[in-house]
Structures are given as structure tokens and as C-alpha cells.
Length: 267
Image 1 (cartoon, rainbow, N blue to C red):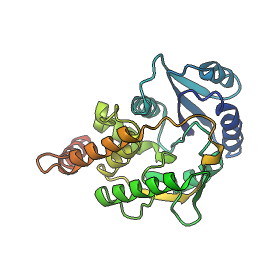
Image 2: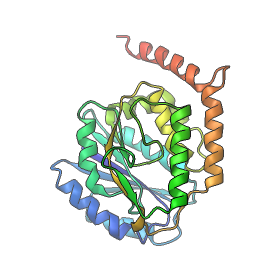
Image 3: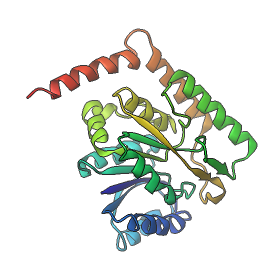
Image 4: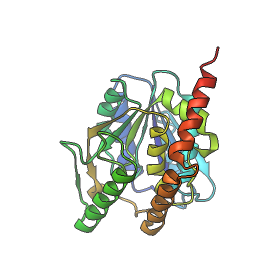
């Protein structure tokens, strides 16, 4: 099965563009699929629209009555995914604003099935790119990726901030089983969770890969939800937590994971 995760907040303009493309792509892959959406307290017609789509395709809706932010939406999506998926399944998470084209899902799934645990759709891989991104935003994005690459190096990875990713089902189950409620700790710090998930998988020895993709920011229908100052603060907080010399994530989580793995490997 291919399980698609969508965090949604006020996306009534984007859903009519995205959902038919998702259905067409997933139906054409010849596998069972399901779309899991977290409606994060939308105040527009998002909920009614999702309920209509659930009559036409396999859509499950998690509903937050109030807006809790991307961190809590991501946590709920991944926890529910860990309950649904089975060995051999692939989980793909993409944005709901029509900037991530579903046509790249088959290449992500194929890469996962080559033996990777996490595969990132990368603007910076050969053949990738972006459209509709102004010079200032492109510069900020490059700086953010450079910052992440310096402080959280993952060999071969060029793209750190894009949320369009594929995950091997078994690795998601391992991550949720090991971290529990701490899978995403920095829930209130904007889009920091996108980087935190990457780091948390790195710390449990995930194998990473990339596929090229084209970010279609020119197709974005809804307003941006990212508050740059909060997300920047989140990156700085996570850098401290990761590199803190007295029990920081880099050492403490790795040690705990070794103990956890040894304990779970016992007959």
C-alpha cells in the first residue's frame, strides 16, 4: 500500500487542484492506496470538501477543532500512519497547497524500494529545480539548507527543508515505537518539525536518498503559513538540543536507541 499524508489548513482553493492529480497518479501505480489528511482547524470549506472527496476515493480525515500548527498535525499523521501501515508499505508526505506535484510519487516509491528508509524530493539534486520562487525566498532557502547541512550533516543529502518525502513503513513504526510522544518535540515552533523529523530519523540510523523534483511555487493557491522568525528560532533551539555537550540528542538518543534495539532484539 501507498499511504499519502497531507497536513491541511484552509486549503479549499488548493484541494480541487491537488486531489484529482493524486487520485490519477496513485490509481495508475497499480497498488492499493490511501490518503490520510489532518484538517488542522480550517475555518474555510476544507472539511466539507474533504468529506466529499472521501466518497470518491479512500480518504481518512483527522480533524483538529482548533488550529494546532504543523508540528502537532505531523505528529498525529505519523502516529496514525504507524497504526495503518504494514511491512512493505510506503508512506509519502507532501504539502496540500499544490506546490508538490504528485507525479514525483512513483520515483520516490521506487527509491524507497531500492532499500532506502527516507527519500527526499530534492530541488537541489541534478534535474531538480523550482518555479515561482522570488530571489529573496530562494536566497533564504539556500541559506537555511546550508545551515542544516553544516549542523546536521547527512552524507549525500542536498535538500533538508522540503517536506515532500517518502518513508519505509517499517522505519516509521520503529521511530514511533522508540520516540513515542517525543518523535516531534518542538511542536510549537513553526515549520521546525520538518527538520526535526529528518534529524530524528538520522539518529536511529535511517538510510537516506534523494530524487529530483520541481517545486511549483507558482501554483500555490493558499497563503503561506510559515512564520520565518518562529521557524528560525526553532532551528536554533534544535541546534542547541542536538549539540548540547551534556546529554544532547546527538549522544543521548543514539545511546538510548542502541539499548532499545538490543532490548527489542531479544527473543
